[in-house]
Length: 254
Image (cartoon, rainbow, N blue to C red):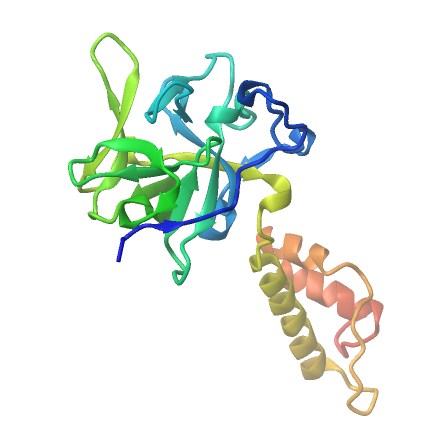
């Protein structure tokens, strides 16, 4: 049995024309944001290398190579967005895996590597060489191949870069900043957990100090985000006391 499996989904863009170069990327006006989790890598992504000047990965129009495109020196990392369709890849989870992903070009070919670290995008089917394991770090994201080697940017003589995947450890040249479209970014659960945590603390405090109500708990109707801000500013206890005072839920409140 072949190690490759065909995938029929086609990379398409809103406003598609007959020429690939004239494609308009999906909903430009919604903007691009930094990917901070593996979930954010599912959908259109923009892979940036942040050196003295910015550069990004791009697929060649003429062959199956993946190259490095130098971005205008006037661009800033926080605001830069892709301006060519071949600078955008589509990430997808590998079937049966919660961690590995594939990266597809606008020509519906998958980025792959061989055991020597040579990067190409010539297959329309997925095999082990087309699978990548994203490693999310504080300074960016690294991509590990099936050979346990990392995608890397290599500076070449005379200026410019080339891409390879034969590095055994993660360093500066193996760490990329990745952007995804805002509407595809998965909502983070941290905020909800934090909101729930401060709300639970408030209820515990009211139970401790309340002297009326026969066990019925009455909390403030003010936005819980105020508690979150107070916690970050080191004024959490004062904020809780103020909220209890407003609902007369503390026997020590004046």
